[in-house]
Image (cartoon, rainbow, N blue to C red; front, side, top):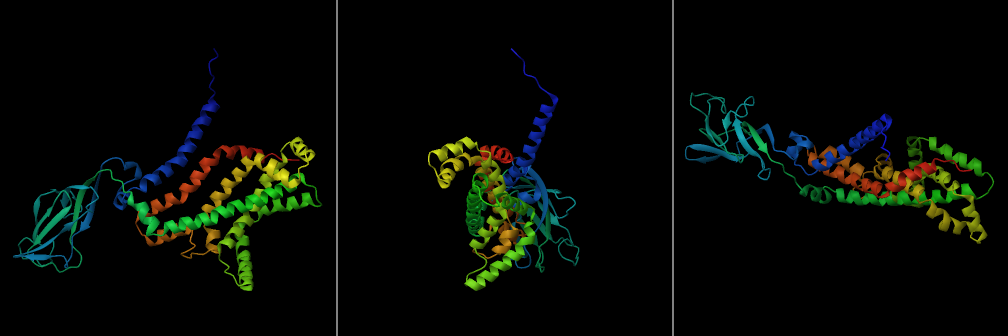
Length: 393
């Protein structure tokens, strides 16, 4: 029995492939895990610590002047340092940030003279108790007059906790659900239209004879080098002019469909033409002998055989349009009823501040669909690209 041989280049190749896969999968996994964590967890620790108990220190303020209640001769301020549903347990606290675990949770400690009130009469300002569940009780000897409460430093143990309500909140109240629907309404037609037009053109360039065929194909290929950014503003002005002339809205779904289709057609025609031209001539000739017209040959013979190439370009186009920001911003704008996911994410980044749980969940929703499309069609991907790279005669 022949033993399998291992070559050094193949081992290095496999290792390089594993590193590339890890480089792509790790951020995706991190974003997925982060989307189920709370804002406090995201702010204090990395996603890789999500499945272990974390010990962290922080500083919070008690209630201010509006929070105290007079009980006998004492002025009481009480509340919670952490959210009730956080699951964290405080192990130590202090009035000094340098030693956050100076006292054990549950102890009642004397607040020194001058710690709360500026005037110092020699008597302690009061007492403080912080329980393990983060509830605190501050008893002062005089009414507290500042709007901001006193600072309490603490150390807490946070068990693994995952929140599943973030997705429902962003899809409803944050408007991500509407943006998701708008993105699908832009992406699906902007993927189907150029593929259909490019398939017809590719067949014509491959199997139909007409004057100027090669010159016209060279012109189409030459359009590949036209920068997208150079043509956006002229096309937008043209849309505005046509909109004013025809009395229709210039920033509409039709406009963005046409823009994406126009920018995608040169590459689509080039790839599909090379694939369709590589189909054996005997197959086309047999169909012609059976009396099939060009249209019948296209639908019954060429299209089924071109599935890998069509799927390869569909993946490219779908991902490009779904993740597009610039074209959607220019041709649709930021209208609330037409805003797409990429623009919505940018708006969330500007208005949510440090609400990272909102951003992580919205970001994961934005790329889960392209990811699903890629994996569902990936078996055609490499085969279609390799075949499309072969020049047809």
